[in-house]
Image 1 (cartoon, rainbow, N blue to C red):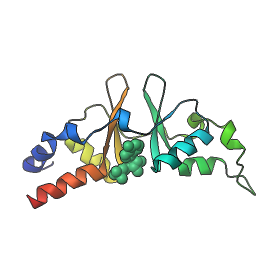
Image 2: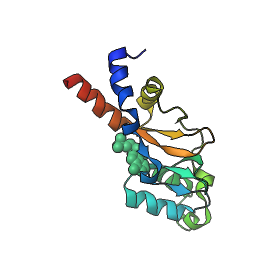
Image 3: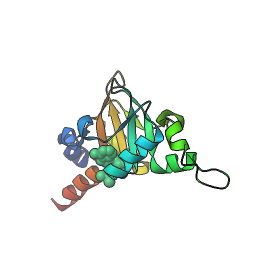
Length: 144
Ligand code: AMP
């Protein structure tokens, strides 16, 4: 159980910690791996969400997943980047929260994950909470 003082401190501004969906780099279901690699390279993040056209969350994709999927026996099969879709290689078992106010769950999940996706009751992607943002607040709390 998170101490109530720290819990309250974090809970107070929880909405401010969420990086809203429109600011989160993502790829869409149906995009090929070439496009996904381009987005990942351009945004500079190693993992980003995969959404459908209704903005529902389906998984996460990373550069490592893409590279792994085009590794042949003797060479990297670059031509497969165009053929494979993000849904062929994305990770679907991912940490997701529907209640962005559950700071205890958020902190618990952030121990093993750099960020947590937040969705609404229908699975529509609302944004992410990152380990970086929460740790920054913990640091502020310790100093205050
Ligand atoms: P950070 O804690 O800021 O380093 O972010 C941790 C991870 O969250 C990054 O490596 C990305 O996978 C993801 N992330 C953070 N901000 C964004 C963003 N604006 N768009 C997409 N992914 C993000």
